[in-house]
Image (cartoon, rainbow, N blue to C red):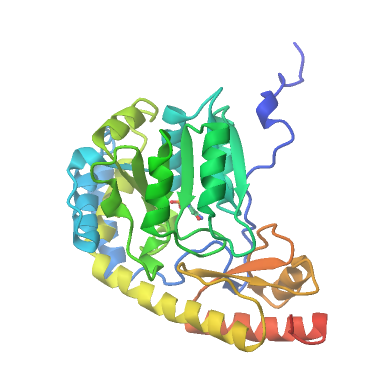
Length: 368
Ligand code: PMP
């Protein structure tokens, strides 16, 4: 027998796996997590809930995660005023899995998915893994979406799915409802509003738009505002027929009873968890204001991160020199730009001080 592996599928050959660096440094501001550890009260409730789930772990979990979906519906009703039945909610291991399940149902070989870049890099990766073609439209210098470009692209590629990330990662801006509706009305595609960062936004969630628009769906996560990235919980709000389609692609029992228990406990504590959002927004606004004061070009941000320009450098050198000072931020591969997550007040100060040193050294000033 040959020791050589069979050939990798053509569409995976030469690809790199997703790999934001996980480096153990004092200030980690590179993956848009919450900087706050869970409270002792929540940790205790999680421990109790996990113990109960562990006792029943000889059985498979509720494969439809019904209780969790009920509680997610409660959270959405409370924060957006939109009351959805459980049949319009879905939950999975992070919103990455939600997106993957949606794409397995609605993308795939012979189909095209439209995105507006720069955006979250996993959109393309997940699309291509299903065998579909990913068509990226350039957002242009202000990182907004030009409706004319979007409508022309829809006509040209006839997408099956369109990704609209709002607030957009890594650029931070939000879409207005008029643009979303104009795109919706110009296509038969499924439109995925990726609202991973919506709790940090100045503008309200676009969730109300999904009512009576079955092709418009909203993907959310507990990884960011809820500070629960380690638990891997994402969710989807959509017409029940979309959820039924997703059920065809999910693995049986995909969401463990332990994960469901942790998510339910965290939802009980949502008031205190979401209080951290306000503190993060203060640091985000501080980063924007401080960098602008120093003459750095900064994109407006509705999220928990900020994209800024590193004039006179491709950005990577600045990234490395910040890392040398114990501050890890993100090189998102956009020449001349870096993205920093808003942290605690202390972490943000460490970042701002380190950047001042580095940009002063590298550029002999921070002008444009
Ligand atoms: N969407 C966007 C825009 C993101 O930035 C991320 C994570 N960085 C995700 C989805 C996936 O997050 P998770 O799987 O943790 O929910």
